[in-house]
Length: 359
Image (tube, rainbow, N blue to C red; front, side):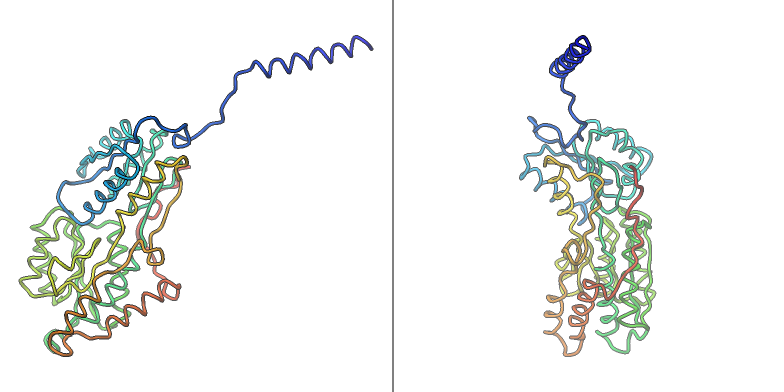
C-alpha cells in the first residue's frame, strides 16, 4: 500500500515537471493576427488598364488615402485582360501583404488562387469571394441605377414635347459583366416604373477601353431615338460623350459626379464609393484582426451608393424655358429613394455577389 502511494506521488511530480519543461505551443493565428509589424504594410492594387476613368480614379484615391493614414507602402500593377491576369495576381500576392482587385477577370483569378497564398490578405471590390484571407466589398448599385432610370424616363421627350413621342432612353455598357447587367436591370426597372410607356435600349461596347466602338454604339442609341443615355463604358466614355454633345442630348454619369463633363446636360450620376471600399479594406488589413470571409454590401442606406447632381441640374434647367424640364423629377426620385431604403421596393441583383464560398 505504501509503495502505491509513493508511485502516485512520483508520477504526479514527473507530470508537473514535464509540463514546466515542455515548450509553449501558440495557437494557430491568421497572418493579420500576428505580432505588431516592424515594417510598413505592403499593399498592391491591380488594375486592368492605365487609361484614366472615374472608376480607376476612385480606387487610386482610396489607396493614396490609406497610404497616408496607415503608413503603407503602396504600388499599382497593370494586368490587362487575358491569360496573364492570374500570373500577375500570383506575383503580386508573393510580394505584398495586401492585394486589391476590382474588375471581373481579376475577381476570377482571385477566386482560383487565393488559397495558395494563405498569409497574404486580399481585398475584393465589386464582387464577393468568401475565404479566410479575403475581405470583399460589393455594391447594391442597382438601387442607384433604379433612381437614375426613373429620372431619365421622366426627362425624355420633355425638352421638346412632341418631337420625341417614342420616349426612348439608352444605356451604354463597356462589357457584359454581372455588375453591368445588374446596373442595367435596375436602370430599366426604374424607368418602366416611372413611365410605363418608355423604351429602354442598351448597347455593349465589348471593352472598357475601346473609345472608337463606344462612339459608334452611342451613335446607334441616338439613332434609335434616345435623348438620354447612361454612359458606363469606362475609359471609352469620352468618345461616347462627344457623340452626345453633337446631338445636344442628356446623359447619366457613373461612379463619380460627372456634372462638369457636359454642364447643363448631366441629369445625374450613379455614384459608387470604390474609394471608401479600398480604404475600409486597407484599414482592416492594418488592424490586428483582418475581416477575412466578410462580404460588405454598400447601398443607399449606408451611403456606399447614391445618385448625385440632380438638384443642381434641376436648378439650372429651371432658369431656361418654363416647363422644359418637369419639376416633379426631383420629388419623384426622392420618394423612390425613401421606398428603396425602407424596403418598400426590393430589387433583384444580377451581380455575382459571391463567386465562391471558399471555406
